[in-house]
Length: 176
Image (tube, rainbow, N blue to C red; front, side):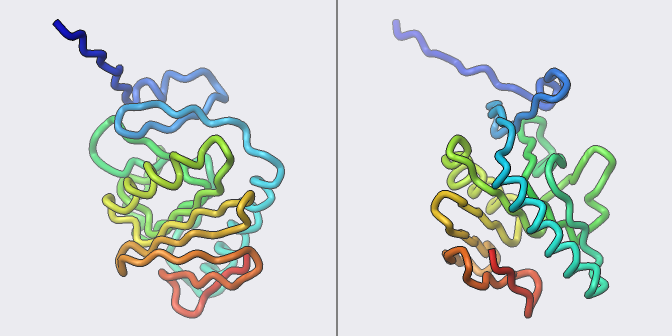
């Protein structure tokens, strides 16, 4: 008789039970612990957040631009919980004190060596099927920005220093 190994399925209750200061994401019931971000990561995060928030504010936009840590509950289940680096949510009825319930319009992840497989594959699939309109993967090591425009079923890559057009805002681009 073959023994079948069953992986434990974690839930948001397990995320809530993490010790103070410990961060993790939950994808399909599997916990992925998050390490402390690097200085480069934080500088990029801060700058991108500032550029996007300034654009939204100067154009009287109704979208919220929220940096990590901010909880995203993509679906009604209790086995998925994400904390993207930047979330842009235009339907503010999705927002609650505990996070965003539903898909943000635009998500940006700044990858680290340990998060690459998760960001490039698992999260890309999750965001694409949940209704995220645009997903950026900013890769400091490769000096590339990979942009998924799910509504148009498009994927483009840009080198750092190139203008990256923002799909959810016509006429807006960012030089990473």
